[in-house]
Length: 455
Image: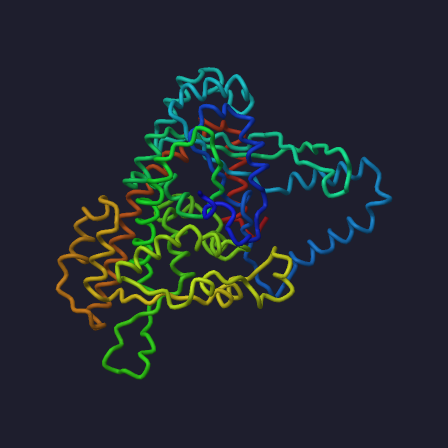
């Protein structure tokens, strides 16, 4: 049922860790107490947008592939093991979110199964202490850089009559959240800490004890909020007059690029996030989330129903057919043929799709306002601009200034939602992860952010 949030139906590429491997990892935890689980991030879906002019990464991958093929027959076992270890070290860490009805009970079981995943202090004081730490901030407890075994089946491709498993080790960062806190975040945007992650494509597990209410709240509230907020934020930057088909008296239709809307959605949970201000996040993160291999298709799969609902309300029109909206790259050139490296400019031209919507029309803006979570609707700085405004639907300089003002008001309100719990989560990482893992994790983040290109 959740194919749109994991592997897209049309087989989008860029999947680094298949669901079967993720399920192997999940089986290393107390699975019977998990009511919802999903994988996300660069360890699950490839996040790579580079300048296509250089092609360095593509050439490096091609060279390594040819080197492996040409030298495989004469390579000894020791060299092969070293190559496997290097490959494992280069694999990005897998991010998981696990939701449970009782966090204290889950941690108690997990301490017995995976004590090494916990830092010394939490391990000493036990599950009660851990659950108290978890309650601080966004209500999530992370164990980063945990080493977990995965088993990948082999033999099927070689025609062997017996299949065997190749065991490997993967680094995993997993967060634990209680069901009721997750549900409230999805429905109310309490802090958008996990709800924000669920704005983007995720790989959702099929759980035997799946809480269907979480899936319902995701579709009926969280995604609805995200698309409405993104459209209102996009209206301040990416609108242009429609062609009008020669009718100079009717030019109110505006064109919004779908890729820009997806970028706005991907960026919602980073508004006010202290990691960005500290340079501990990749400045190209949003671009990579949307324009890496297969991601555009996944985004559309996630938000297809939301587009259709807004179209039925008469708020927008999909300017292309569904097949065109979901079209795959056909003119990416040699660097993207293998599905590993694409550039932002190439991706945008390949997915040149748009929505027809007049976000300068007062009734349209008011209807989108009604799709926002109550926290944003109750912000007087937003409601005064989107509800009690006396502006007309014509694009006058005053109206344009008003639209920009509403974007600023929404951004400020989101920052108040995201910022405080994100700061608390970062601070408690010293306790939950320990000093060594915290420093290693922050160091890895800084190399993607402030120290990018230096180290």
